[in-house]
Length: 313
Image 1 (cartoon, rainbow, N blue to C red):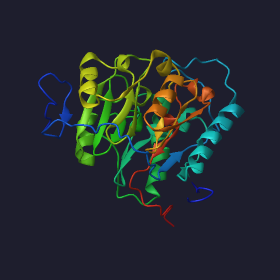
Image 2: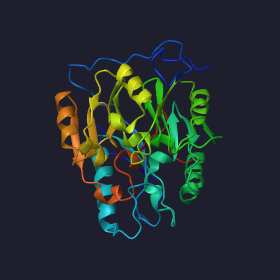
Image 3: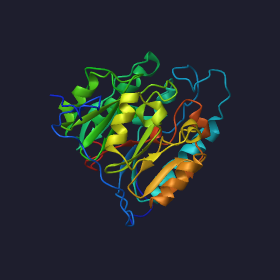
Image 4: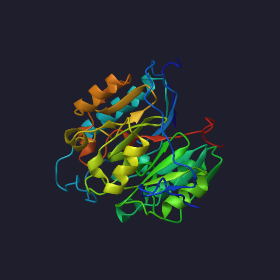
């Protein structure tokens, strides 16, 4: 199902003091300085899944507490508000049908990574989510993508693999195997920068870092190992730095189209910093989904370079 807008308006080190490496690139990657001109959005295609069967029925991260009440109707309302906001920006939203017994399927970002119309499927670390991979694989198999590949090593999709222009920022430490980063480099033909997560509260990269535009990010340094903090500081000297309060409300679990940035509304410091940099922040209430350790980005898988031809007949 596709929802349309209401209107169309060999690894080489980064440097002697930088570890982990940039895989597949001979020279250090350098980011762009913040632009001072008006920012422009790029039309995007996203994959989302209604939280029809959402609940906290198991615990696989520090945010999940079995038995804590969840308002299912409110979760659906918050998700619909997020979807409608994307549509109001002129983006296209594809939908995958939710599967009973898979309450975390709403977090579509974990299902795959898509770039240049090629799809690397996810392989989940926890058994509770393993069956999601079959549902996402079936969805992609019915659509016009250049290639859909099953991974050899564990990776949890865009939860740990964030595309920034021509590179991939790749998280490891809690979910995605570090060996999966080489698989990502080979499949997409892009340099991969390994980033080690050190705080179990921020178990996926997309809970601790958000790509705002080519060479522009915001992140929470305390979520990373010392070496990875050095890498990020060197590659992104002008990054927006999140406060503890921002990180604890999942303010970095955000989606940017180059101009509009959607993020949890309690992340007030980040909202202010984004405005200073010329972005248009849009705070949303995603409190029910946060009970499972997910927010805006978790609910949003970007379909980069995919042909909008829909389902094969």
